[in-house]
Structure formats: C-alpha cells, structure tokens
Length: 173
Image (tube, rainbow, N blue to C red):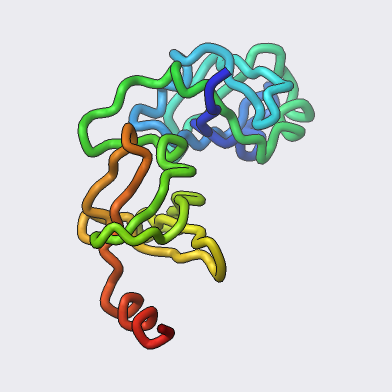
C-alpha cells in the first residue's frame, strides 16, 4: 500500500444521532466522500461517510454504523487517512506533504542541509522542518523565496537560507 495522507480529523459529537464535527484538509471539503472508506492512522479501522453538510469552519458528518452520541464521542480526535494514489494529481508547484517528507534538502550552492522531516502550519503559513545530520531541526517558511525549487522526481528541495541563519552558520565555522 502506498503512503497514507491525512485528509480529515474527527471532532466532538454533534447532536444525539451519531453526527460529528469533521475538519477536512482537502481543497474541496466534500471530496472526502469520493475517496471511499477512510482509514485510521494505523489502518486498522475504516470509516465511510454516510452524510455530510457544511457548518461554519467544518463539516457535520455521520459515518455508517455510528448512530448514537456515545459512539460519536468515542471518535473524537481520530485522524482520517486515504492512500496517496486515491488523491487527485497535483498541478505544477503543488505538492502533497507526504511527497516532500524524506526529500534531501540542499542549499542553493548544492551543500547538503539534511532531510525534510515535516511540513507544519501553525496558522501563519506553511513551515518546512529540515533535520540536519546533527543538531536541532531547522524550521523555515515554506515559501518560494526560501524554497525556490522542489524536485520531487529528483528527490530534493533547494533551500535559500535566510541571511539570519546563513550568517549564524558562517559564525559557527
């Protein structure tokens, strides 16, 4: 099986008939219904969306086989995944986070920096986390200015280190 991609997270129960709040991480929130059964992170549990409707900043959804509030409450916090190949193809300059994890990170001069460990978003934009061979991870803005080149097929990202970081490295040498 290919890599799993997180497409949603189940929130609190909604009402008394087994509905839950559902936060989706897809461009079209209702796309999760088209992916077929959604999997828990460990792949041991499957969830099939029976119904979904839009709410303020999330969906209110029901899953097949979940009919009571108690059952819905036990699902709170579960992240839902699909196999990478079920997702639509990306446009140029678009990437799924899972496609970037593990890529080599090099400077604009070709010097190795480490490997892409994760892509985070704490609310102010995407952050790329790079694990160097030794020392603490680098957390950098995942922008065209800082990451001017992403070559998934070539297995690398090119990073233009901000002056503050590049200057720090020069002082350490």
